[in-house]
Length: 528
Image (cartoon, rainbow, N blue to C red; front, side):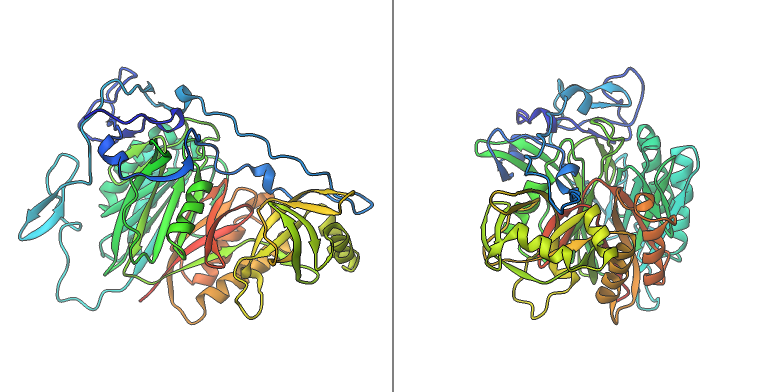
């Protein structure tokens, strides 16, 4: 069976097959190339028109709010800059140099299961059934409870840091099995990601392991925005059905498609970690909203070292340089939380004339005129914040009786036209949709995070959480260090928190999932 043709930005990916030589580079490693096959391509879900190209998932400029002029004017509308094509060689470069798909390997599915003592036990890297904590389930003990632990290390070596962070995370499980683990690496460790994976698997023996390289990592109540860092999250989730995955883009007769997603049936949570240079997150999210309304999808865009070819995505025993990884979790209670860090100002207004992302009229008057009315009526301090960056909040679900912070999708204003009185937003709008202007600063971001957590967790007992926070937050937004990590762990009453700084955050608003900016999204696991 011949391999399917992939777009230049979506080819490659090397697997962590422990007993194989790495292709290319001339040194022994633990990897070999994995090809996507036509048998898989037939099951691909098409989410972009033919000849579409994988692009960085978010253009940060399109979400940045404009500054008002002294006369209250906004800049004229500008078209978003085009994303450049990904260099195919740099996107496929790794520790061992450039990898070529000149020797397609046989199709690989999930790891085979071996029957041990009448029960199925996942096989280890060499094909042997694992034993120990992974293969044994205790009997006669008290009713199982959800346990979550997290660890963070700044040790200089990837293996040492991962081992230390994994041990810290595992201690919170109190001897229970790690059903699901996440590994987040700073760019300083991307070339040694295989060593980090091996250390976590040796320390925790998780049933499933998912991870990535990100600009910065979060563990417990600390945030590391620079320098070497490894964060590990581990959960013992009794009764959970977990399906981890690696998804990749391929070219089909109908357009660009994806392969690798498992079933989303009965999902309590879907996590998604995306490489922005090889996997177009925004079209995928739009397609998932269409096909799976209400899907509890949370995650982030992991930019690795900030350029193509500096990403490693972890899926169980495999490493991939491209695509997206994640896990579908069902059978356990999970809450999704989205904090966009904004405060609403002024009054709600219905869009009465619009086209695409341009609003011509709000409540029957020119949109720009209405904007100036709202800003002029603000107290001086809020006028100052509006001048630094004004945003628009769009109600997604018009059926709620009263709109609160969590009901608005916040997007930047990207321009205005004095002649027509129109304003342009970083999102498509529709006539009849409710709009309210917002401002963002450290105080509003702090209040919104605390209120969002309180509303989501009312009456529940959280065990731990995954946090995907914007790289524009942290020290870029708050005067004190570790802000989001401290606020979340305080709200949880638990140190079981890990995550990373994102170049785009994924989370639901009003029953639909969006790609956000300047946002913190979370998956909170509850103690059932």
